[in-house]
Length: 379
Image 1 (spheres, rainbow, N blue to C red):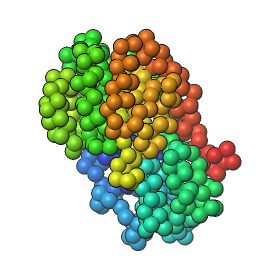
Image 2 (cartoon, rainbow, N blue to C red):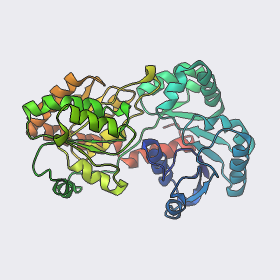
Image 3 (cartoon, rainbow, N blue to C red):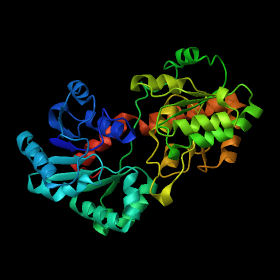
Image 4 (cartoon, one colour):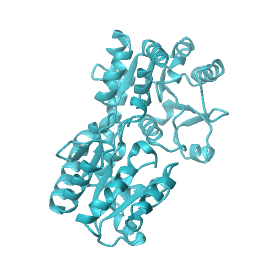
């Protein structure tokens, strides 16, 4: 295996899908062969002490592609004998590629998420993304949505080096029976049908569309409950919307839930729904939606929005349904159909478990990542 420097702004203890993805990729590498260089965050010393690999923290909470960041990364490359650099997100730190190659890195891999698709849509940012693509050996993409948009922005040579790399799921963590009954008891849900959404409370995720749909869901399924797991800047607006529509008593906001308790909160639901939508003329899109895969692994049918690569995380009509983001009508129809047909919903959930096992297990993703780092033709 190569000696790897993971250079990233996106790393725990900061929470988020990108951070979890980069952390999981790093954990898949031999601990003795990897060093992480990431920004400082509250709780970082305690988090870093629990990691099997070495973590170096930047003095501030953000790293930019500037000379002093390049110099610190170059010192790590020299000290630890790193021959490979993985940019946890291609933009903007991928702009340091030429400097790090001069420092001794022989292979540069840039991971992309959702925001690089936004860069590809803006003239100034697109030229920077093109520079990054030309300077690295491999740029990854999450799904077809980002692949198409990245390819338009990159040079033909860089576009030809795009490879697919998406997050995976640990089915031993996210599984039926992961503790949902205890969550139901604690929240007073009993045996009521529950639609659960696990996500940050921000406009793009579509919790407002769920709440707008809820009066019509209740008309068909009077005892249904909506469980919104997570926190974020949109929470106050969502709570006021629920009260204004008269469904406040049928919507539960859990607030921030510790990471180890998330599988149990998935398991507390009968249906998972996150009707994400694209915002800001395509600059704010869903990167993939790892929560859809985690829900499928837990045995839940999934209803997701059509933003970005989210449809790639749902086998439409098999493991769940893709609906237009921001439109309550189609969402209502799908939720009612699943809540009123428990046997059909369970069958979709069982297909989801099989799909995760066949295509989305972390063992498969880790193997692909190792091939990418090694320059294997299979990648």
